[in-house]
Structure formats: structure tokens, C-alpha cells
Length: 451
Figure 1 (cartoon, rainbow, N blue to C red):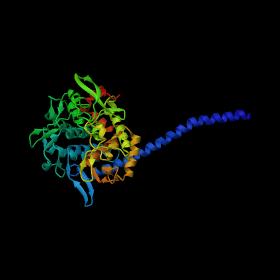
Figure 2: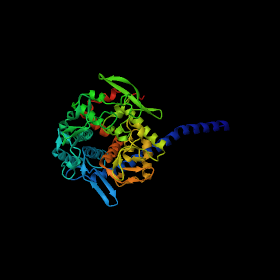
Figure 3: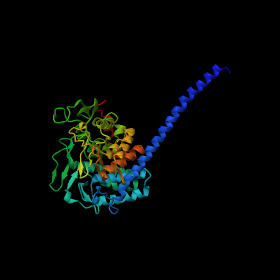
Figure 4: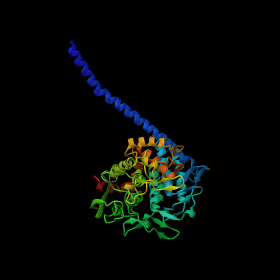
């Protein structure tokens, strides 16, 4: 073989191996990184669920609202809400799905909770906002309020549990069927009231009018149950009407009819990107409902698309502000609790307070996994990692931590990890129930004006 031919064959061999070997190496590296990230998430979930095992009353199955580390020691808030209870129930399903506890343990834990729920005081089947964890009695010194959004989460948790464990289905169905949402619905406006004060005998003056906020879970379930008509879905505001000049932007869009109802499909703009705003501009208003509702899978032209856009804009907002991390949502502060948000993303935006919370990152996992992975590292650098996963919030300017764990926020982290690692398992359980399945067409047919 002459030298020219030999050299030509050598170059051909090099070219072929570079085309096949390099991508294989890249793929192997990507697979390795993905596996490492998944292991990291499971480790976070394991610590996070530790909060529920350590701070859920074993006799009642009711989880403490929050636990704080202070100079005086550990402060345990032995009260709970319908949302906290739902977060515990769905976190327990998540823990079993992730292989952290056995099915037997999950069922035993949940059975204890369900037994308590059956005995607890209710109003038209709906749960009060605050109960004592030691015996499930009403915490009357915190009022006697019936919240639409909190009951929405209670229903969601019960539906998921009933589908995950058929041996509990009869109990969960009975509780959900007894929850009468018509008592909070205003048919003249087509919207829900915020709630009902039992002691005063009064509904709230305000309605839940903004669509892209967490009360849409209760709306979806009430439609699925048949307590309210499907037209309710279209009676909520995507943005406020353009003539409402108090809102943070003048929305642009057009009016479209859905099921005979005129809907103003308005949107805002941030950094040349269109989006449908939440009320305050926070992450859990935007993404919390998607833990159970198949917005990502079915609402590809509306809610799912907007969820992805919202995550991108939260990340962009943090960059614009020069913050070391992103993720703005109501969270604990060193002395209490406050609302935080990416302010421009809200109809009436909350302040950002230079404060980020871990649950916001985990809610974003399914929409921006690589950005979430980087942000988790950023949160760790800010010393947010703690015994039960992550402390609740940090001020990115001062580094001041809120050394608190909230049942609500721990639940959002737990459920989000399970959905990400197990292909939307919690949503699958929710939608396998007729209540979750019936309104699916509402998600499919809508088209937001943000294309």
C-alpha cells in the first residue's frame, strides 16, 4: 500500500471514529450527570420527608404547621391546616413512590390521618382553616374560617390517596363527596368567594377572580365534582380587563368565546416575552396547581405553556436584579412569614425583598431542570441546606436565613421531586379519578395570547 493511500485510510478512520465516539462519550457524560442529579434529588427528598416523620403527631396523623430553630432552641407550631394535611398525604404517597417507605407504612400512616379527618369538625363537609395536631380539635383562637383554596388542596390530597391506595378509596371518596363547594360559589359573578367566617356567619367580600393563582385547584375540583358549572372556569380573569387601570400593566389581547362565555385572553410583557400574570408574581401561585393538574401535558397552548414561560421570567428577573439565586414565592422570614415575588410578573405584584425560597426551585424542576440543578447548588452556597432538606428562605443580599421548615413548603418540594423523577406520578393519580378527569377538556381547548 502506498503512503498516500495509507494516509487517506488513516484520515477516514479518524473521521469516522470522531463522528461515532465523541457523541457516545457526550451521551455517557450526560447520562452520568443526570443519574447524579437524580440521586441528589432523592437525597433531598429523603431529608425533606424526615420533617413529616419527625413532626407529624403519631396518634392523629396531623403534621405541625412549622418548626423553627431559634436562639432559645426549637419552636414547634402544633397547629395544622387543610393544605398542610394534604401536603403530608401527598408527600407520603411520594415517599412510597420514591422507594423511601414501604406501601404498608404509607397506608398505615394515611389511615391514621383519614381516621382523624372523619372525626374533625367541618362546615358543609368543608374543613376549617386551623386545627390542633394533638387531637384534631378546632383551633378557635385562630378563627373559624372556611377557605376555598385550602379545601381545594384537601380535596386534591384525598383524591390522590384514594387512587394510590384502593384500600383507602372508600374513605377518601366519602370525605370528598361531602365537601360542598356550592356554599362558597357566587353564581351571579361565576366566581368563588375567598371563604366563609363561620363565627360571623359571613362570606368574604372578595372573590377569587384571578385565574392564574393557586385557587384554580379548588375551581377545577368543584367542576369535576359537579358542584359548580364548567362555565366557572371561563368566568375568572386571565388578566384583569384592560380598563382596570390599577393593575401593573395594561394588558393586550383579544376576546374569545369558550363554551359560550366571552374570555379576554389578555397578557402582559416582560423583557419582550408575553405571559399571563399571577396575582402577586410568585412561583407557587403559578406552579403549585400543576403538581396535581395536568397543565404541562394537556394545557400545551395555555397553562402548560405559561408555566414554562413563567419559570423563564422568574430566572430572568433574578439575573436582571443581579441576585445569586432565583425563586420568589411566599415564605418564612426570620421572624414570621411574608409574600415574595418577581414583582413585574404579578397583577398587583408583591415585593421581592431580595428573598428566595427553595420550594420555588423545585416547583420549576419539570420546566427547567438544568437551571434548577444550578440553582440548588446556588442555594447550598447560600447555606440553605439543613437537616430537613432546605431552610425555608434566604436573603440573597444579606445572607440572612429563615431557619424554619414549613409543612406547606416541604410538601411542595417532596411532591415536585416525585413528579419529576416518576413521570408525573401524582398528577396521574389525580387524573385517574373521575373528578380529575372530567374537566380535562377545559385544559386542552384554551389558547393563551402568548404564542
